[in-house]
Amino acid sequence: MSNRQLIQVINPNTSLAMTETIGRAARAVAAANTDILAVCPVQGVPSIEGHFDEAIAAIGVLEQVKAGREQGARGHVIACFGDPGLLAARELASGPVVGIAEAAMHVATLVATRFSIVTTLPRTVVIARHLLQQYGFVHHCAAIHAIDLPVLALEDGSGVAQEKVRQRCIQAKCEDGSGAIVLGCGGMADLAQELTRELGLPVIDGVGAAVKMVESLLALGLGTSKHGDLDYPVAKRLSGQFERLN
Ligand code: 5HY
Image (cartoon, rainbow, N blue to C red):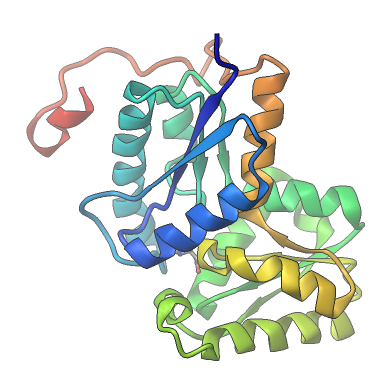
């Protein structure tokens, strides 16, 4: 009997390059008996930079969770800092579903009394703010900084976005009084280790944090509770473009 376990890591945008970045970050921390299935929706939005994009991405997340379950995934990670579709995905899933924003925020509170967030476009700052309220971390977050570049600038190969992330992290360390920094984009996942070393404080990537949280939940024998509001969706016939979610 193999003790191997499959964890599905979903990039909710359709960028294949970012999916590979996220998959590498997940595999870098996965336990020896964990296999990582890094996926993204076949159709949807190339990057998620606001409420409209989040709504579109959520459908792709649900389709991927359904497919992941059919492929034997024991747990799921939603690898976008808006955690799109998180509660709906938890209704669909039997195993744990963890978003990278909530995972990174939880981890930050375990290693520091206050943390800062560095994300992409200024317009997505409010999404991070809403999540802080939803998860109960408002008083732990000192500041949210935006590099003011689009999400896919992280995948353009120029290194400009990565340098702006580094500069914003240095600014956060110097000005915010934070003990830790949370990287506010799945596409920043590969920057955390080097920034932690260079800045001398925990710089947290939510992809790795979420993978380890799913592993921990599985090790504790815990899946998504089916008692109450996260029970499987009420059975009904979905139509049109949603038929594949039946
Ligand atoms: C993410 N968007 O992690 C978010 C980042 C953001 O396509 N992947 C995206 O800025 O909200």
